[in-house]
Length: 186
Image (cartoon, rainbow, N blue to C red; front, side):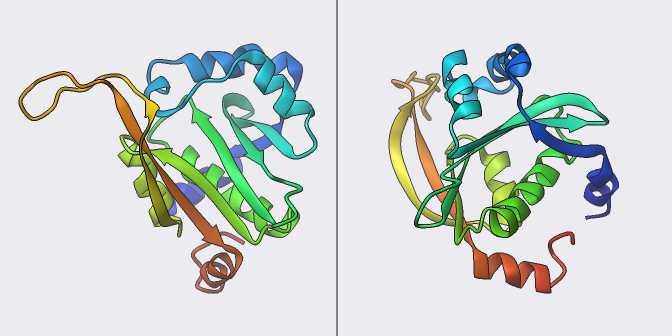
């Protein structure tokens, strides 16, 4: 926990501007990120910037662009906000954890969410571990519902290339309990 808190003041979110879209598309197309997301067209990102139900943010580390995040359902009448995308350049520095914490706080305290949810690819075990450690609960699995790079099976035979999506969520009462236990930064 100490290493994450060390970066807290260094990581910020700011609204994405149209002038940031080349960066956004570039980090999304990075070979280290592509297996774990379904990239969008530039026009989809433009729409997310302009659509009132979405929030599109640039993640900055020490005032330099480090990635982006997208929230959807910000005006959802069921108060169910989705963490649609989190894509970062730097890995292993705690930036993802800080982003997740900032977004949880935003969803529950600013956007009035009752439920903050996401889906994560089955192969993205690193992200799954992060979300679990941040209080997210697995709700279900959509089996082989997205195309993916083929991987060999136990016998070395290449499969067709599909991956699962795992739906995870955190409820407001669960978030509040984490705050009361000191598991969320104030």
